[in-house]
Length: 338
Image (cartoon, rainbow, N blue to C red; front, side):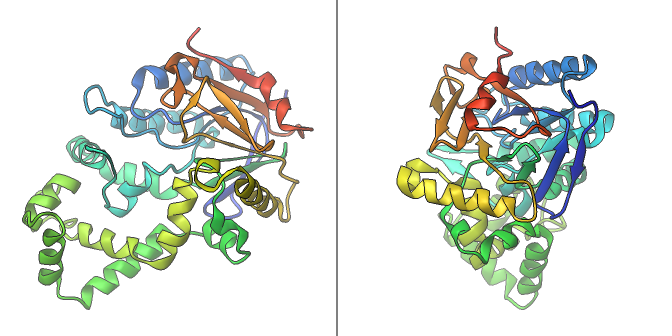
């Protein structure tokens, strides 16, 4: 086994891992018990010289029910792990982390995910640390083994040759700065009224307190609901960022078209690099702990998306050893629930 690891960052949102054995975990969604099991397994494997780095593919936050949601504790523990293990702890951006970068809400049915995390974040006094972490998260990780990782999968915009580099170089801060600049030329009071009118005429002050745990008009984040609304209206946000993090893969596009988008993504991830043969992602519920899609996509479910939950799995693979086919990864699947 490789005793060290090499992590390169050729683009802000596309990193390269060229040596070391990686442990991959997906979508824990505030499940402290599952997180603790995977964290402790990594610590043990690392101490035994059997794993060099831990890759978390996003969506560590937001439990389906607010009761027992320990999202912030997980994120803060990841910060502690990074303090101990440095860049050996790799955290990819998921669709549930992204809304907290932009100050926008995320909901499914009656469950509005973002307010609970925002309140916990404000109460913790560690907002700046978590914000810096989320802002830094890459979207893609590729390896010398020919295995790439992302949160959700491939999406249709990737077939346009102009789009991959836009995603690889994506700057949250540039987009937020553009939104802030746009706000300076607008009637902010009117925008607040307009925002309230889209939310059943609930006063903007109440909405800001609920969605972002803003203390009041003097809070420097008071207008961040408006900033997020403007940023998310930017064409490339909806056209590129949203599909990249929210894609439903073959369930959205059908298997034939998804195979085309998957091949296109792997081809783009191979440019000026080792050929990428397989994609590993989570994001979608499945029976058991893993499923192979279109012969080149390993869908991994570590807890939340595994049915049943205790069927969840992690993946262990040598990032320096080229795979021959996606089936090679099957030997590295493991469980912390047995």
